[in-house]
Figure (cartoon, helix red, strand yellow):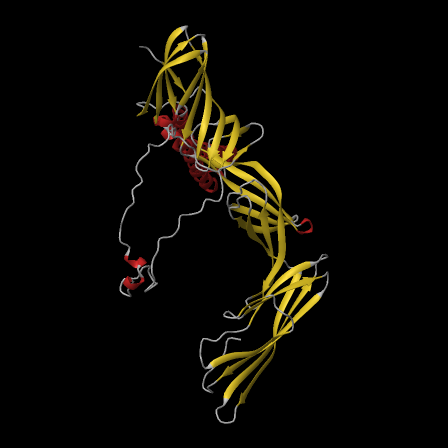
Length: 511
């Protein structure tokens, strides 16, 4: 039986692109005779041969045989690139040889000119005619040398251009090498009702294709919203350019199972897990490294919080075969957000702007890097965590230089108390000030702290704040305050505490 070979004569019409794979649909128009026809079609080596689906318009499919194989000779487009590389290398050798010949000619002219110049003072000074002739010869040599100098510059430019082309073609060959040296071969028998057949193939490309998200997040405090623009960075370097393709992005993975799984018995497996019994946990055999004597239980399975979503890209898109991704806008929405400023001046005397984003939409935001803005002002790069519907996440938009914070130690007194058993008291007073230089009201979470003692002979007491905190964590000495600041308003928080040492020889520091 005679097969008609068809190499890469096709058009990708649509693709569902997953994070690291894609389901591709391509269409081929085949010439046929009425009756039974046989074809061999070579597909990309990154195609999963078990995923291929075929539909015939103008005929009926009789049989399909799929085989992955290596080619004895490279096929297009690798062959054309390899031929181009050979031509470029031949041209490179020609110009390198020409450059060497020009260099030799220049050296010869230099030596010839020097030799004639030395004769001027000895033999030709008394012979005006001969001297004039020699002078004209030297001028000619100088002119010729300048001409050769310009020529060698032109040749070097051509060599540099050829080297760049060789580098580009070499990189393309490296990317295409698997495509040109192996592939998936389809042997198809079909019965044609027409002389023109339309063959539609659908298959999974399981490597060198995918997408990942990148976001632009604009905090809009006046609206109490964040505007999130999602860009998909789509890449494919399969060796085949996709032109004018309908693109759908998916957050999931392709499902290729053709039939449901077989039903099997669900057997209970009995095994002894000694560390579930508290009495058996020992110091010699810790259940978890670094946690001695702790009973062990396996962690619960991860909770699935979201479903797979698809995003159809409007219109048609070109995705060339290259490693650099193509950015595609795939979602843009405004989400309700709660904004606040946050400062922890004991360690960092800066005020940060934070937002809690509430996703009440049906959109799933896959985790990815983000450019962060406060309105139109760029604040830097961050990361948007995965945000399923009906969930929330927090983002820090960096320092807000328009909100000033200053923490000062105002008093540090040291004295002794007690008649018989004396103790040393450190009395400290601090003041933290905030000022709003913005033209709108702001809310600030101020985190203040007093020290905590890990020594039973040192006590912290007499803690006083000028304002009432809304949250206290005594074990960490943390006190949180909610502060509303009008434009140009200044706020001051004063607080004090005593550090009391029961022994005079204990040195206290760290404040």
